[in-house]
Image 1 (tube, rainbow, N blue to C red):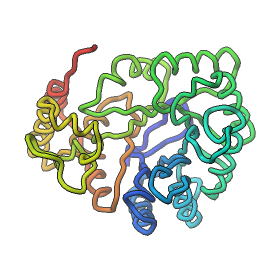
Image 2 (image 1 turned 135 degrees about the vertical axis):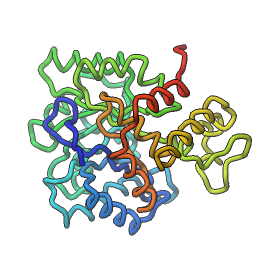
Image 3 (image 1 turned 180 degrees about the horizontal axis):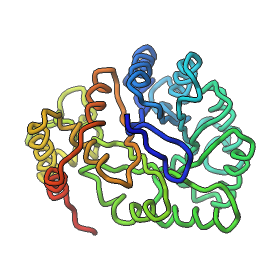
Length: 324
């Protein structure tokens, strides 16, 4: 497997990152362990999670995905696995049980370390911005965690360009740990948010990029058909975003182009969509969310699939957008 350097860090990560948002939600504990084993055996060394996964599910207190990882990782070589988790979301009922303030971050990291059954986190990420806290307070807390050895590198998720640049400037000005990784939503039918400004920031500042939702919640899998309602049991039944795509002819044109390219190379629509991301030199490792080993095996089929220049251009053209 062709491992990639994560931005300016010393970490080398697999070209796919295993996401864990489904674990404890649409995938149970034993299934999660099967996926972890299969991913590790296939060479995936990069796992992304968050403390809040999957607190939105009834009866789930949060921290469940981290707990699964902790139980699994006890029997694996820790130094061969890159663990990424996130802080920001509400994890209790107290006034300081959420956000990017120092009080919450210092307690949240200890809770994550305990659940993950490790003494360090390779990549600790701000799950989303927190405008109620000065960025310098957040970065000083991160800097202390790095100096203490509890965190190796830090990253941001769901940041726009000006917030990311302000954070980088603050780190530079005050000699603090800086965001070395960005986790944006980015895929063939969701391009503008990242490409408009963030892509240039990441390229020029040497920031690793680990996009989430590479197949847009399943829309770029082929399970949804033009002119038809979302199949029973799929995310499209309840997702407003996918419901909008179901009404969008241009979105279906992208799916159809992926299908066309895939049939030329005996690849699935999802494999083509992931290969398109991997063809972007700014992208380090797309985050794949899977419910079972079969889905994992399908996504692994994108790793060594190199799009030709013509195929890449045809996908670019089909998914082209106009800046607002």
